[in-house]
Image (cartoon, rainbow, N blue to C red; front, side, top):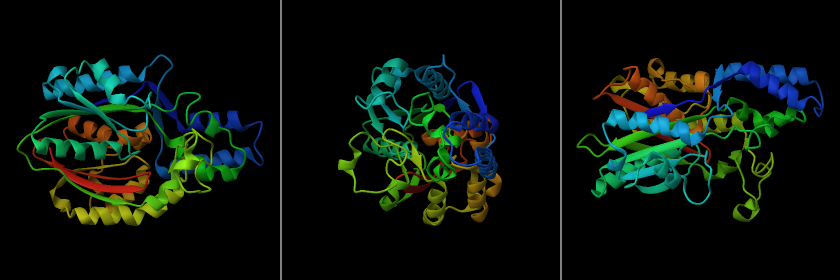
Length: 342
């Protein structure tokens, strides 16, 4: 596994300063009070800092760094990769899939390429698909990559969502202030080992709670006042409601996995909030082995779980033969718990 984080460190104070600067001319109410409230919310989630790309940094170069690290660990050459799956929201193309440009940049000339897009669940879905492809016997090696870089100026988040009109805007924009950026690469090989196990729950009726709509989205969905609440092409997320609605389903999917806490060496959760997931982990008896990255990287979307796994493996907190568990929720909404032996 390889991870590449951009070089720019953005603190909570930096976020608050940007909100103050962009909202100063149009805010209806006490902007200072609103900014203090945002600061309190960030601290409540466990946020300290996140990493953003500097102007000279290119997502494809960071992805190349992550992929080279993963290939070296796996002792494989680029030409030995049979399948390349590009996952996640951060992307430069709707057509063709990001996997094709990534394969070209990484020198994966023999790889069968395709994308999987399922919001923060994308990497997890990709692992399940790769596991199924291995079972067919046609493929023996796969690489899953993502480049979650969506915070550049003029994108879906910045600076538009930093221009608050009133305190009420926080309901649909607060999660934007927790986001970070990262690239990851995961190499999987088909071996006679214990298969990964996945348990999923989907709640499509909650889809309007988190969305980045395209022009013409109205023809592809039923009406909802929460769709495109911040505009077409911009990130809308009702984060407080997402976590409130999701807690019971996240707990249910973990229970369906049926893993014994005493057999688990490390727990990897979605980095949507450190304190939220710490509380969930405490409830299931895994609070002492959560691999938190949120306080350092922010919410890195589909890269959350592989970033944490990469750190745990590099630090020796998850070793060969030991069991790991993944646990996450995602826009959709969907929920998953999975387990594997490294």
